[in-house]
Image (cartoon, rainbow over all chains, first blue to last red; front, top):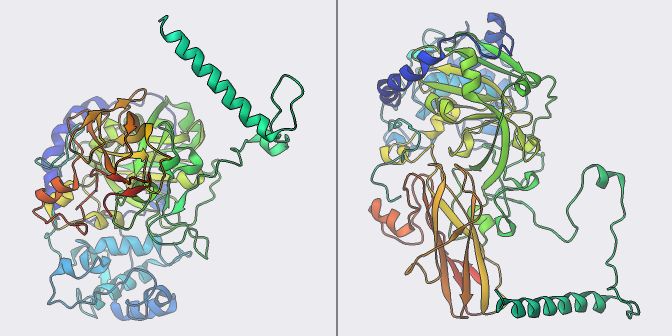
Length: 191
Length: 414
């Protein structure tokens, strides 16, 4: 788990104890409809760091390379993930360069491989969002992680293995300080 | 009182003479006793249904950040508000800035089909129609929204270029805390994910403490429905937070127990803890909108210096103006009520002596945060103060405007 979540988890229970006890009661207005479990599954496209929402399916980088060509990804992102008009998907700098200096590249810098899966699934390809199958999303995710030297070419990604992918950033990113109302964000800053 | 009367009468007389001179000059020889009438705007159906401003008022938004907006495909990119022409604290909906992360087509949503689902760590997941939401107790609040990338630069000329990615509107809707209480929060919940229904379904993690404090699910903006460019039919307001959190076309809220590392969240990560700490909540900020860059003062004499101040920390408590490049600071007048996380209009009465000088403003908010200068911030980060110094995190530094002796106004950061 990333360093950013730990600070929050330590402090928030106190905030929540106060509010939750008051909240665990019956609804006040009775407005709104209860969605079915199936409806929630269909609407819920968030894939969090644990990957608990991931659907069944599987894919490898080799399959992903084919999907990348077939779905026209190269049209915007370049044949190798570099050189298109859209965000580059592969670092131009090699692994000898410090990670934070290698550019803001999703499959390289995100602390969780789930972020890559989530974004391809919800937002790609442009104007045809939501048309990729789960297998295709697994395959594309594997392809992007492979071209950034995060996983080997033959690694099979599925709901179990994807959340376990070790991303190069590890926990080398700044923790987010707890937010409190009516409080300056950074002590000692000249404001 | 009595001694003031003649002065007032003098003023009225000269004012009447001025007004008379105006209309008479444009009219045929006046034979009667009333000034000639101006040209007419003929009534037409559209103008009766939804009126336009005068054709003589031409203030418009401009693309911001170097990309055309719209582009050849109809994609909309950043668009900045003409703050140099603004009066009062409300930005007209038509002039409210637009920020889009990767450029977007504006979704054309039928509000009868739109739903908001709240689920995750709640006792009772619920789906709301727009009609449902309008049945619930509402609040109406003034709030600014500012893009995190709203910063002055050496290349900028006008206040629209330096500060135009902030706007302020009156928002109406249901407090998110009301909806979450209706669903019942489960123990251990600490964050929520807000998601839009546009093509990329942009999603952000937001602290649950903020939801319970003052987040607002807004369907109204400036007395009518939220505009499509602003998230019709439903926009999440996260008062005082960076613009990106104010999710447009809100379709889903998922209550979770951790920072969910959505695409937007990963984009927010930083290596430096202090830079990360400066994210989310916007610092105290102000800018003089008149006189501002590229405007022209006709000559020495009296001017009301006017500007806007705002802070993510709460209400603006104090605004100060310097007319000598920051040597002396004078209290400005706050116009009307300073609302929490809202643009606040200030003014300072100034007699310009015709000499070159520099105008600055700085504000203090209700929790005592004072807007810093670039020099203070550079010192904090241990960086040399030169024009290329880029303020880390959100740039809320003081904007200097240089008034040349010919009355032209220039960006003091240039």
